[in-house]
Length: 362
Image (tube, rainbow, N blue to C red; front, side, top):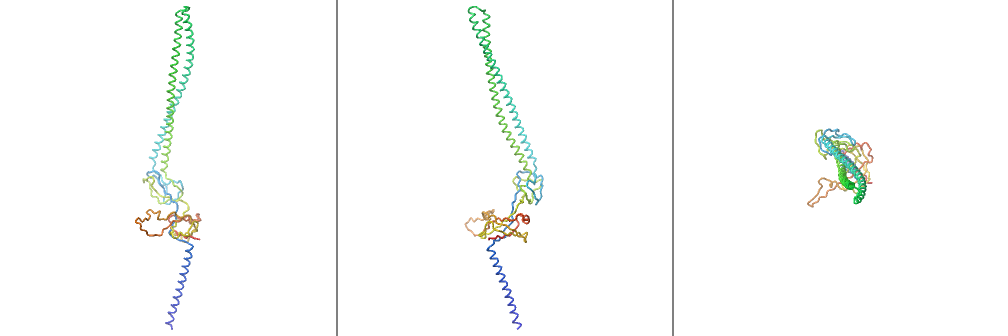
């Protein structure tokens, strides 16, 4: 009797355990099935944030590095200082060229002023000569009248030959005096024309000097701006990455020195399979679980879908040139933003951290 009861007890216990496993497995499967109908999950997701590279605009030797790895900086803080002695020389050269251009303008202005003074004097001289010509004309008219009278009187021998000759000499002297004054007026007019031409030329020189001064001022501003690039400033508030530059090192313009992780709200980029996107849409609730904080869950929401799959943005996208094709399920990046960005846990997140996301489809 004892030999037959033991197998029955074992058989009964086995059935109970098997039934429990079947019931538990069924319940788990049903739960997962129901959950899968209302949720989409993936662990192919990471924290992302804005990262700004620090890039010098000029080449040169590093004079001083004022920051350290992982340091927090504010926008405008000095990060690196380059040796700017050669740039300072260029500034001084541009300033000297500006002084030379200003001196040329002053010389042209002085010449213009002298020409204008000459024009004024020549015009005054012409006015004086005009007055003298009018007086000479009156004198000539009177001399002509006297000569004509004496010419008539000499015929009748009413006057002496000497008186007649004096009248003739006075007439001829008046004519010569008028001719001399007219010649002087012509010469003064020519001189005025020459001085006026010189004034026009110097005026053009002033215009050219003004243009040269503006060009030199631009060169000075450009040289000073380039010199200011020797001081490399933080583009935004944030944390610095690994700093690879050292004093004495030569760096090239456009070379990426290090990066600043901007001090703004991070987000999640989750790469869902294309087959998971059927019911997903903007604004759906998302539960985010960060691997670094396994006991914490963060609320978030879907804010955008990538315009193309990740393979299209790859450095070497898959391309079957032979025409053969093997279908592979693609993944589409989905941007997920936190509902409460001021949460202390959100502030502690760093780009590149792994997370798990659970999208609530309903």
